[in-house]
Length: 345
Image 1 (cartoon, rainbow, N blue to C red):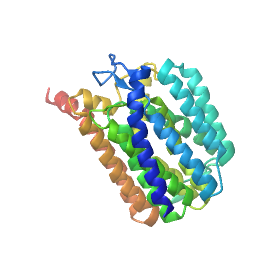
Image 2 (image 1 turned 45 degrees about the vertical axis):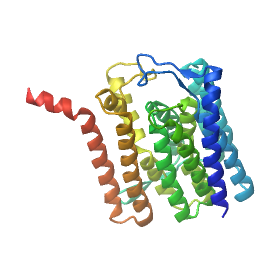
Image 3 (image 1 turned 90 degrees about the vertical axis):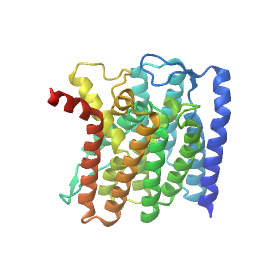
Image 4 (image 1 turned 90 degrees about the horizontal axis):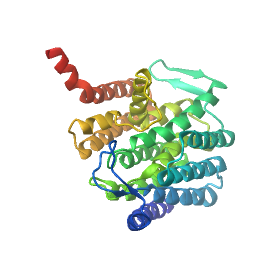
């Protein structure tokens, strides 16, 4: 079967490529030096995610040309732009304005090529809302936000790679069920390329993903629903709910942190250590615990998302309950101790 060959190539190329990068990263001086915002203590090669980018895009092109005969040049060029500016940022530290302009350009390329989300299904309410041209702005914001959200969340060993594996698995299963052949194969590529990287990035990490990898993954998970809709327009109203749910905890963490910092008058575009996952580590939780927690919650919500997408009905309530329940548990783990301490006083 062709998928076994493609997935095997993705894993082996990623694993071997990252092993080589670890050596070259030290030789080239591409090291993440600890600073007052860091959660690691020794210099680590940074930019290993470039291997995920290279493997994923080469296999995406192969799948698109030789399997499905349909290349999204908007996605392909946009992904290369995002990866390129992120690679430069890993090396030289590019200004926020320039990075945003490139991210915006990539988003426009995708929307021009693949279109934008025009309807959204509201779970439990059981209604589909036609959003028309508002979908253009929503799609643009979604893509740009995910590029940066994934980058912000790549701050401890394994968390970005594990989220990529869980989200890719969700897309893999749903694409297989709904007959999105190219998305099915590409999701498997992302899954196994991320797995090959994660082996090197699991605690204690021997290499970091870098902006090049995290921004690329954020961009790709944002565009996957549009790639699916291009392949088959069916279930168009469900696709955005699926896309958000599969990366929900990265979305929630970054949105909550963004507005908390905005309300406090902080510069929201600067690096910090106030994300929920960072607070958990700073409170004494290990990298393995926090990464596994986010991975477990993402997997549980991913299972609920698959049930919702396939069966609907009562599983819509399960999806909402899973989102609210798991999010509440996460927030309590972060802030519960301080809340209980205040009440005891």
